[in-house]
Amino acid sequence: MNNIIRSQIMIVKHKIVSLTAVFIAAVAAIVTGFLLNPNPAEAFSQPGLMAMFVTLFIPVMVITYCYSERIQMYEIMAGFRPHQIILGKTLVILPFAIAFLAAAAIVSLISDSSLQTVERLILYCILCVRGMLCIVFLSPLLKIGTFAPLFSVMLLTINGSDMDALSRSPLSLLCFGQCTLLGCEITEGFVIKVIVSAVISCVVYYFIGYFTLKKKICLEPTKLI
Image 1 (cartoon, rainbow, N blue to C red):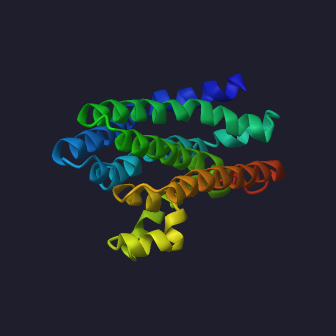
Image 2: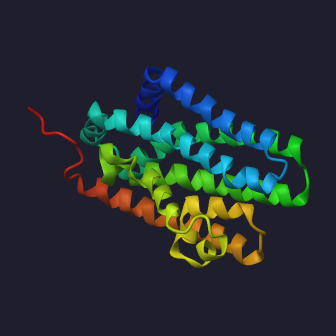
């Protein structure tokens, strides 16, 4: 698995300028949100949603390059097991999420260190990690189309402005939908929904990625010449 980690680090180094720009943009979005919003709840809901959306482009860029350069094919040919491939990618990409969330935690707690803000911050961290793992785990299936989960944010245009309708719709089970609802009152039911849906979705996505790799079929975006 060390070779998988090294290959992913090589991709990160190759894309370091672009990844750094995306990371800075995400941090700037969350910082600006807290500076311009006196209400921390609203800062997590809208600017926080935008910051999370931008952050999730980091795994998209790394994984897309992995498939365009056929690195995935070499990992399979080398005999690595599915869980090693998935775990290796996760160990390289997850630190970006941790670094972003550390910055978000600092700026949010400086703005407001109340219990409600801490609670929203914890839920926001869960949602960001869920989104990152979703992209990594589904990448064997989606390949260079791994950016597809990001466009689920467009579904919020259906009833995203009506928080009551959103909380009762299937969109409230999605990562971006729950991030939007952070601007509302945090109830025990909402906390349970965020945690349970995160666990279930990550487990389901992992097994989708695992069995896709297990079959070793149609994993490359283009045919070898």
